[in-house]
Length: 159
Image 1 (cartoon, rainbow, N blue to C red):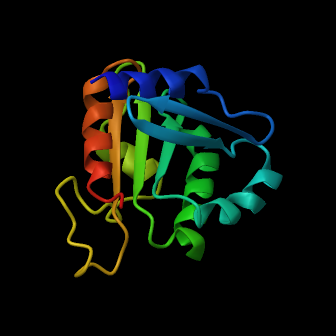
Image 2 (cartoon, helix red, strand yellow; image 1 turned 120 degrees about the vertical axis):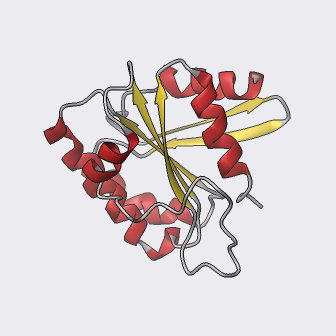
């Protein structure tokens, strides 16, 4: 649980997308995390492809306290990542953070254009699948149980 608490703290120290490219390294327990915030500026999206080859997974964080119309940017950016060949084999954990469960998971999937795209919270047999693992987890901002579920799910797909 210390691992997840550490990751959650790190995520929320940097919850707002940076106005410029940012990266930082943090060790939590015996695991080293490389965080890349390629956030807000559209120019930063041009370098996403460069990072894809160096990643084991993508954790895409969406602030689910937004109004419906504010999901258009994150939806477009996420769809760009999902359609980019550089990320074709990477597992995607989509963490939707809320103050309280503002949106049910199905509605968030719809707002992010992920309906019928997620692969399920069970394990995906990669040898038989023609897609990469992708799942949405909705978590209250500081409730670590859902983060733990998400990271446990993701850990099955990291080499």
